[in-house]
Length: 224
Image 1 (tube, rainbow, N blue to C red):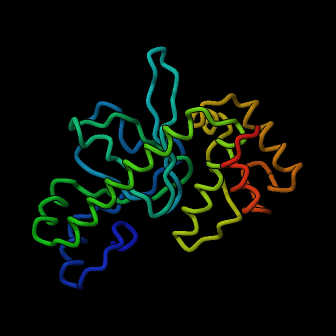
Image 2: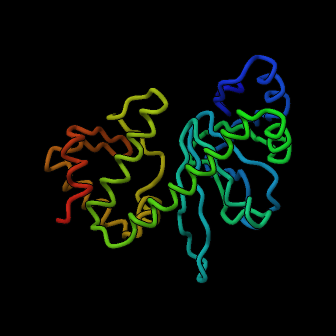
């Protein structure tokens, strides 16, 4: 079970030490909170099944989606810098997560180099993901943004040995639009246009990528 939370290549004794403090939480129901913005940072979390959305509120109280997390992915790093979570994280569907107390993980990392190295790699991935999001939102067309998001989901599912072409998007069109900085109407229009081009097959939250190469070309193209 622990391997679903921190998939480390460590020996059995080290794995036992790790499993001792990983907490397997009861399943979360849709919209149930994992942590709230402003709460003291104590743990990071790994998605075992289901999906999680993180978001913050702008100065006018509007929700700004900051991330989507799928099985095998770890979230909660935003609390590390100031010892409190900057975002709120909620389940998008029935979701199972592991809670990993950061202080204990840090202590174990001092004793087991493989764990410390893995944690640094996870933090690096989070930084890279933030940089990619900034680049995505800066000066890209609506089609590029939607195509890039779908390709991101495809690649992440492939890493988990799941189908990279059959996507189930548990988030709403409104949540996608918030994440990409677009209107709901624009997201729906782009998905419809990509379906007309036979790049996708769209059935509500089910999306099948029919031509991944063409979608990749579109994501890097300068044309709308």
